[in-house]
Length: 137
Image 1 (cartoon, helix red, strand yellow):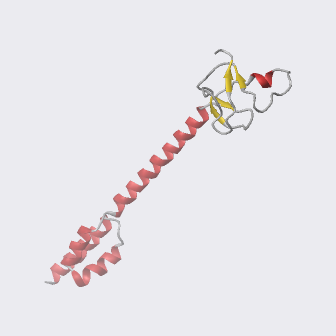
Image 2 (cartoon, helix red, strand yellow; image 1 turned 60 degrees about the vertical axis):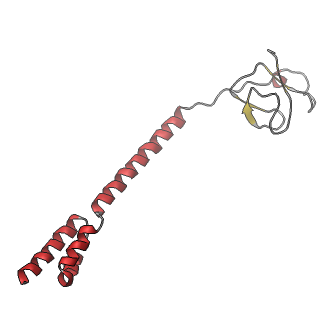
Image 3 (spheres, helix red, strand yellow; image 1 turned 120 degrees about the vertical axis):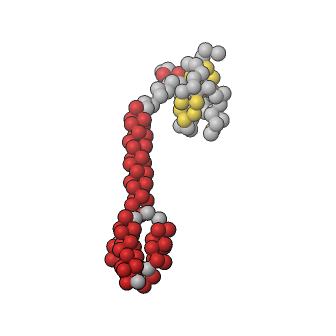
């Protein structure tokens, strides 16, 4: 019986250390419980595997962050078409006069009245309602 008890304690120590638990805690747990402690240690999750999964996840997150940073650096801001009202030397148009752009575009333009950025294919500003007019139409 003593040999069985010692084997259970050794088995607890080996099983616990292979799963990442403290050897001394496993020996102390295995001393009074013997076979029950072996079953409990067998059913406990593997801390080494969880640490490896966490490390792999951290590496994937770091790689994704690096990729996002590269994409942000590669992305260049679109050139905005300048409204003709700003180009001409004529006096500023009244606030109800439409903003004149060279042509409709899918790029982002800035409303000359309120400064909101929006696609250059709209008929008016979504924020202040300033009408947009296009020369090529």
